[in-house]
Structures are given as C-alpha cells and as structure tokens.
Length: 120
Image (cartoon, rainbow, N blue to C red; front, side, top):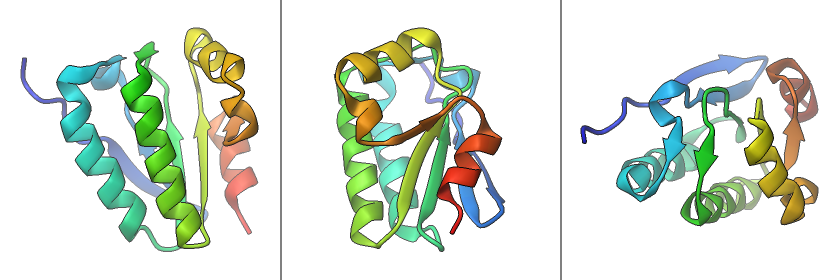
C-alpha cells in the first residue's frame, strides 16, 4: 500500500486547518507512522499555535490515532495553543463521546464553528 498524501493545509483566520480527506478514510496502523510524523511536526511549528483537524472523509480510526491526538494536543498546549476537531463521521464522534474525549478536546460539527472556537 502506498503512503497517503500529505494532509491539506491552509490558514483561515489565524487557525491552521489540516484536512485529512478521503486518503485517510481508514486511519489504521499502516499509515500511522507517516501521520504521526506529519502531525507532531505541524503541532510544533504552527504559528500561532492553533490547529484544527478537519476529519471530513475519515470513517475509521483506532486507538493509535487517539494516542496521536493526545500528543498533538499536548504539544499545542505546551505552546499555549489550542486544538480542535471538526466534521467527524458519526461513528468517530461516538467513539470520542463514549470515551469522554469530547470533554477534553474542542469538537465542532463544522469548520466554521471550530475556527470560531479557536480564534482569540
């Protein structure tokens, strides 16, 4: 299996938005190394340290991805930054709700709502 392309990256209203898209429909162990390097690097370099992960197109992720979200969130928090997720598929949103991670991270239905939550 070939490596997925890099996540789309834009800055909107001072918030860096990463879009995973259909290349990351199923985030399993086969792509975690690439994704781990990409997201942890971005979390350390974005300025200002506000990062939104747009999950549109993602229908599955495992526990390794949740661990990665903790790492990314911690790196941003250490830089006095903010982290959010948006456009979660129903199953993915349910996993984060059942594990109470929807109380740990900012999660919004749309990109616009998430950007508003991350802005100063």
